[in-house]
Amino acid sequence: MTTTVTATSTARPAEAALTVPSRVLGEHAAGALRAEALLTPKPGLVDGRGSGAHDDMTLAALLLSADALALPIARCAEAGAALPLGCDLRAAIGAVGRAGEQRMMAAAGGVNTHRGALWALGLLAAGLAATGTATGAGRFAARLASLADPAPEAARRLSHGARARLRYGASGARGEARRGFPHVTRVALPALRAARQAGHREDVARTDALLASMATLEDTCLLHRAGREGLHAVRRGAAAVLRAGGSGDDRGRGLLDDLDRLCRARRLSPGGSGDVLAAALFLDSATTAGWRN
Image (cartoon, rainbow, N blue to C red; front, side, top):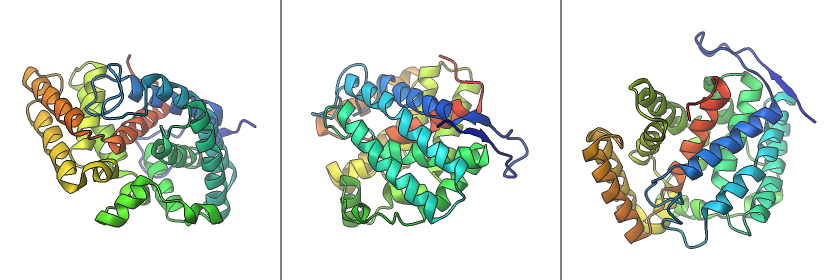
């Protein structure tokens, strides 16, 4: 089934409502995941140079995973367009997400490549389908994520991020969603667009958007690997690059190289910020004429 999304938002007059087939939203999501994976360099993350801080992931696996998630994210959009916000929609999104994870794992050879991104982009796709704007999508996603998944198997799962939340009292991906993805809509997406407006190349704009998230996000991927000290080290390094003028500045590029060496040496992976960047690219491409390549 392909549902056409037609919505009128009252969130902000400057935002035109979308009329986008759910299939196309799925394609935008896969494109955003591919763009995030291909962006190089990314401190600690898989990119065009290699596996970063990971032993079990490759760029090829990430690209296969990205393509595999187009369908489940499109189905999240279909559900968001067809069902009112409530328990039935939350149950539908949960079922699509679990099936999507299996599809992702099969495509990536059993590796968890994009679980956090599927959560974020799935909720935002449902929000775009229901409201038609990026602002509305964030608000809708917050309300949807605040509802409990009624499936019994949902309560039994304990991911690395969930363990980090319990150990460090972090809000994690769940808290980010329940607040309407502020690091997507109020940090990474504005940074991406501001860098473009300043005349930077697209790769520089995307890298600076990633760094903007890394400088502030309480990333449970980093907490899981290296505790609060590792999280703060990455935050400080990302903030230093931005203070020096960003990744397009000579001094900023040098500090980015320093941060990359730190992440690789200490096996620090800011995977949460990678998901934030993918979600920002998704909202950007789905709500505009598209990005520059």
